[in-house]
Image (spheres, one colour):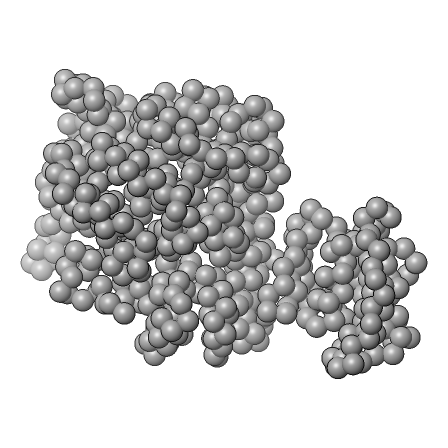
Length: 396
Length: 149
C-alpha cells in the first residue's frame, strides 16, 4: 500500500485537501479487497483510541466500513458498534426519505422537472444502499427558468431559506438551503454546480441526464460522466476537515460504471470550464492510491493543460487553507473575485470590472455598493486589532 | 388470531436483514424494531403474504418445535406485529400459494419469535453510536448512559 501522507509526496500531503493518515486507512478498509482492507483496518485499530470521538469524515465512512468488513468476514470487539452505526444510518436514511417525500410530491405535482443530485442518486444507484452513504439532506435541481416558481412553491409549503431568495441570489448563487419548522431540510438548486452558474453549463449537465426512480417519482439524475465530474469538482477544495467522502463516492461510481464514463466529454468540459487542475489532482490521486480505472492518457492530457489566470487565481483560493488565503491583505477580495470571475466568464473584461462591486455588495450582504469601502475599512481595523491584541496583553 | 393471511404493511414499513438480524421501522409512527432467529424467518414469509397456518408449518419444518407451541407463538407474534401496524391483513391476491414444506432433518434450535421495540427514536438518534452504546451497538445504550438519560 502506498502512503500518500508521506512528505515525499507533497502534492498529496497538503493538509486540508487530501485524507489524513487515519482517513486514508479507513478509506482503504472500507473500499479495499480482503487483504488490503484487513491490513488497513488492522493498522487503524492499532493506532485508534476508541475512547476518543471519531473524526467527522471517518464517522461518515463507518457504515461503508462495516459493510466491507462484513463481506470479508472480519469481526472483532468493535464490530457491534460499527454495526450499530450502520443501523443508525439505515434509520436516518429512511426517516429522511419519508420526511422529504411530501415536498418532492409537491414539486413534481406542480409540473416541475426535478433532477436529484449528490447523496440520493449516489446512494441508490452506485452504493446500492442509501445507508452506506449517509447524507444530511436531499438536493433537488430545477431548470433555471423554473427557479422562481420552485422558490414560491417551496416557501408556500413552509420552508424558510437561510437567506431571502431575491433577484441577487438567483443571479449569483446556484442553490439555497431550506428548513421547515420541524427541522427538515433540503437544498433547492437552480444551477447544478456552484462553479458553473450559467445556462450553457446547466444544459450540458441536463442534456445527458437519465431517468431516476425516487420516492415514488420518476425524476432525473446526472449520467455517470457528469456525476463523476460533479463529485471531483465538489470534493477537491480545501476544508478544515479534509472532505474525503468524494474519494469513496468516485471509487464506488468508477467500480460500477467505469465503462460508461465519456472521458473526452469530461476532459473537454473540465478544460473549457477551468477545472482541469482540480480534475487532474482528483483523478491522479484516485489512480495512484486507489487503483481507480482512470485512463493514463486522460491524466496526461489534464496535466499538460495550461491554466488560465482565472483558474490559477481560483486554485489559489480554494486549494489552499482558508486561513492562509485570508491572512493576506487582499485575501477577502480574492476569495470573491474567483467566483465572480467564473460568473463573468465570456462577458469581457469590462463586465468583470464593472460588475465586481455589485457582486461584492451581494456577497457581503451590504445595502449598496457605496458601503464597500466602509466594510473593507472595518475588516482592516478588526484584523489590525487582532494583530495588536497579544502585544497589548503583554504590556499590561 | 384468525385464519386469515398477513402481509408487511408497505410502504409505511421498511425492513432489512443485517447479518441475520431483522431490523424494521414503521415510518408512520417512527418506531424501530429488531428481531433475530425465528422472528426474521417469519418476517421473510410475511413480506410476500402468509397465512398463520403456513407460518406455523414453516417454523415446525425449520426448527425443533412442536406444532402446538409454534401455533401459540405465531399467534402471539402476529398479534404483536398487528398492534404495531407492521403487518396488515392480506387480500387473497396478495398471498402466493406455497408448496408443502418438507421438514428439515437437521432442524435449528428453537426460540420463540419476538420483537424488541424502540419507540424513543428521536432521542436515540442523538446518541453517539460508537461511544454511548453497549457492545452489541446502537440502539442498545450503555447502562450508565441509560441512567443519565
